[in-house]
Image (cartoon, rainbow, N blue to C red; front, side, top):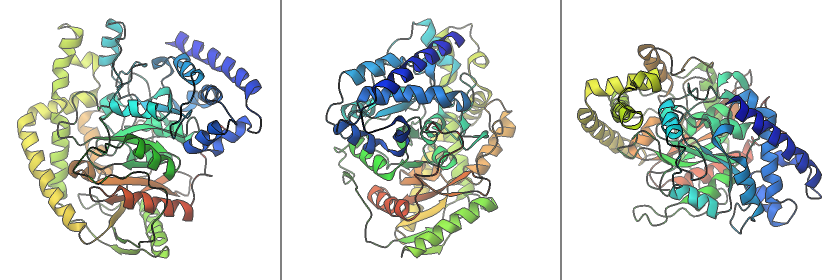
Length: 506
């Protein structure tokens, strides 16, 4: 592994030297950080920069910051394949020539995707790293001209709210490397926040786009269930009830809006197509401000202060904001959710013997958190958990739909706490200690996965000591236009593009 890293760094240094001497006239290397994905695509289109120069610039940025944050899994990806694609030309798509990354939970033909698990990593090594076809979503990304330049770190099978897998180590928050970058798209969020790439793939089965977006100060939208093309995969059989959605994390609203247009499943007859949302709406919204978690806990004072400031901003923009409470049976819902989450991991236990042979014990290749979920699922019974989840999710859906008959949007925290220290939610913490810790802070995001509604984290506030606090805005199913139009307005009123963390690859 160390030799692989040395080889990559030597190659990156060589590429950086080449990039220094070949950058197109008029755009200096240090200026790339000013551009979002569509901005880079415009530079390519107008021949101010080439796709190869952008790809080589990503290598330089990885070399500069990745050792400090561990966002990109350099040993899981052959960077020369990205250079080959860049040399072949950008195409004509909206993101032609733009470097992006994929989360280590998605299917991609040109990378080793191990889902952050020693189980999968050993299986791949045992079978000489068999290639898997790319998911339809990733195929759409490449058709739009995006050039995959790496794989981002993720927790084992995306099962927890931090990115600290035993296999690859912790991804650290670029704003404070002693804090978590969130999960499960933590590597993606850290790679964007630190300036390695302007946007990258993520998926969300309980908050996994919104949580790391919140904790790393980037923009993240979870689409309506069924909105996008075939998902990138949660791994390990997770998502029997289709609670996971794929999209991206980004530094600009327009990048996310354009990405959604690229990967939207326009053949889904149950949803009105979104298309490309290009700006704000004049319509003023009725917004419910919800501060309490499912079990009635108030957020940390720093989080409450931030969300109230955002509510005030919305009010100043002419929207009508009123404080409210969700009519959800919180304890019943979250208990059913974690039961479903746990029951859907039970199959992993059988995969150990199937993939590695009967002599391999689950504890040898699965993390304590994963094993704890498996045991919880077995104790409750997968069938009973699924039946309870269907009932609880259906009840929550009916109640939430009624709320959206009175409000256009719900504003709430994303997390109950600001980014917490590395290790607090590590998957090696004893399960009976870790489970209540996780449930304590994720009391806002899972609802929208369970019912299929859309929600986003918008980076509008920071703590007094410089940690990001995202604001969650949610709309009913099909409400992406409402959210994106609002996000454009918030972005213009309270810009975040110029705010950079301490670890930033300028």
